[in-house]
Image 1 (cartoon, one colour):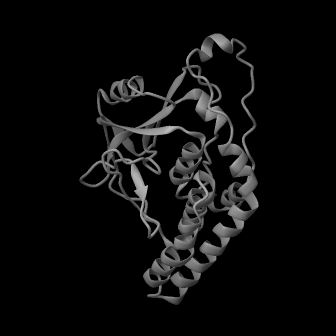
Image 2: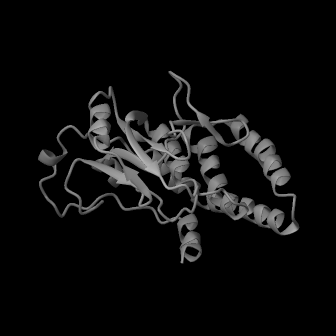
Length: 241
């Protein structure tokens, strides 16, 4: 991202096949925006494309209804201004839930999450299952929605009761999976507490003016705001190797 020169960038997962015309559809949707925005493509994962999502009370996503503001978008295919990537660096060390986390940051910053249904792509069939051990990342992202996107004590209470209870019930089939889930839950909370101020400061960065970025920043050596170094990211380096 730091070596790219285009004002608009498209992120595509390495296991996604993009159809002809999808990139143009993303750009067209972006051009129709009415404010600061990012645009997700329609990635088919299974039988249906994944639309913008809203978090349910239980802590997992459902499709956003017409006129409903999404909590996050699927990051398998999406378009964003290069300036946004510099302003709000993506946490690529998260094993699961990085798009949910970025949704919280974008919501707090005032960035709209749009969808281009004509920007079709197809994901490989092997769905990235949310296993017991991956809940550390996911609860980290959920906590960001409760305390970073907006201060919503009721959502925090739901995470610590309904979401936790659903996980305990789902992984109670074996002692090993239940233990793994509880450890991941605690790990995610500890990491979020450690990173709270960092995430809050990140989300409060001002929205960059993307109208004439190339004219205002002729110096190709200009450095972006420093990417945050979080405890959460450092924990993930070992698990990714």
